[in-house]
Image 1 (cartoon, one colour):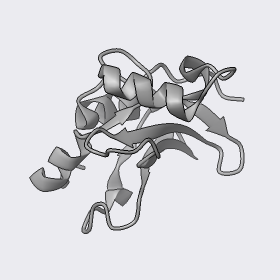
Image 2: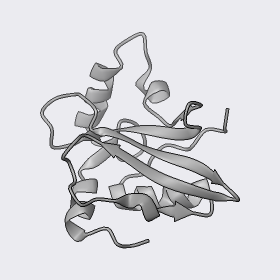
Image 3: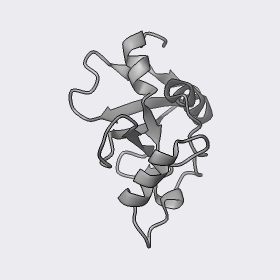
Image 4: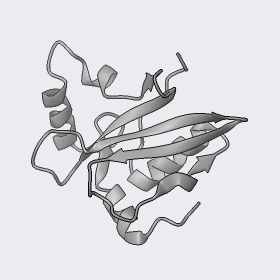
Length: 130
């Protein structure tokens, strides 16, 4: 499970959730631009359940980008039999050679802890399933 190259790990640490503890002020500003009033970024930018794939998704931004568009998202997808997959959907060409298909965990919380370590950021709490 630890076969992510150092180059990719360094790139992942430049991705950040729009909300959560310890995110830079620039990311908070981007969240306010991306989810303008009357939307509340703290509510809309956190983990959201997608019942199409039945996975919990979290939007990510690139802290090096000079625009507000999201870099993509990360999802924790329940697989059944107590396992979850950590799925990255990141803009095309961002990380050639990054194939995280083997990021399988026993619980959603275990997947979240691993993600927090990869991003070097505390992501918000995962809401209860819909």
